[in-house]
Image (cartoon, rainbow, N blue to C red; front, side):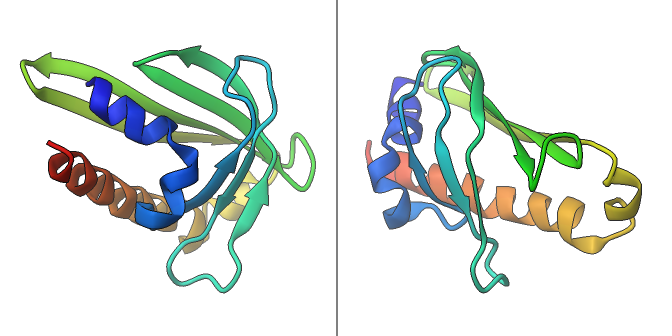
Length: 135
């Protein structure tokens, strides 16, 4: 579990392995703002957000909350969570909770829900490969 947490917290290495979150920078501390650049494989430029860390439980969870354009339009709460299953088995949970006034419009769109799920899967697989190579 510690190894996976180390990989997740090594933001400088994200461009080397992470196909979805291309950059994270800033102080990892509850209440601080960080810079996160995400790019889905079919996007030309991706999106850069400056969310605030709202939960940090070292070794177990990092959650940030950010907004697209302005707060209340489309907000996203992104979590990276580790759960120990047994021995050397760890469950990695990555989730996003969207809310805001744009949800009714966007929920009919393919890009937010399906695109996010696909990108999470790509990142999760890359994390698994990186963790297994590190053994």
